Image (tube, rainbow, N blue to C red; front, side, top):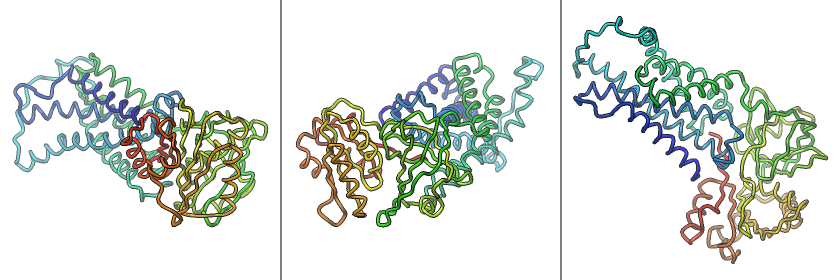
Length: 444
């Protein structure tokens, strides 16, 4: 989380500083309309800057993953940027449109404009100025559409498959907002650093939008496969799906995930990979729990031999660190990345002392026996905790079971709130935050 916080703040501060080097939020004389003029420019630059960066991150740039500690963190940054764009754009819209309403209502008196004529403008500036009316109308309606789509993306009850489809509409809306920005940005900015950076961001965002419209995002990392086997655990409401990937898959590390498409109408869904990669048999396993409409339908819809498309791998939850020991916490379906690591360690034993804590509300004997066998083969100490049997898993319970916890790292996958409370508990007891790794497996 630290990396994306730094990236977010750095981007916002640098963009603001560049704008302040070109203009001011305290014009002389400081009047309502003078402030309105500069604030509209500032808020427009910030809104389009963060939206351009959000568009870029939506392309899932693989080279950026290690720097931001995984695609899950990149998507969290994407979400923050989207929220920032929404808030700043609302303020931008209100100062632009709300002022016109207040003038119409008689609350404000519009100042008399100067008599400067269009003949004094240069060729390019004059051409841009001639499109102001169109740009204002286009920007206003594109704003309404973008605001609605961003709000829908933040509403968890809005179905994922509808979110995935509607969210793509932000790409053409971005192009309209880019046109609005080019026309209405103060002409003097374009020959200053803020203008150069804004132009670069608009070009990057435009390329990302075109890629999205063309359906090219992630296309180079997509490989075809077919379902090889299906195993259902009714007590857990969990489906284990083995997928054969005959060619193209580059391999993956335990803890990584992939985007899978089994139905073009439904679109892609992210799933953690629950198997180690073996180029000799070329298959991967996904474990999904019936937690929503889509996952609840998988058991009935997926069939052996069904073609699927797999994109990836992504993620940096890869168990690579320096401490001599590791503490794993896989809560519920969060056990998935640890199962993949079991397979890796069984094939290539490591030197670390590892304890895995698996709190679960459901109990399936066959699945638990399989988990125990995998843990034993990997040389991992398994601490199983079924709800209603024993106390609640917390920091005290983990520290009591692992005396050397201070010299270990912690890897958590499960409900975000549970992970945050564990992190705060351990940090409060002197644990280094940089050794607490948490998967943020939320793509919206």
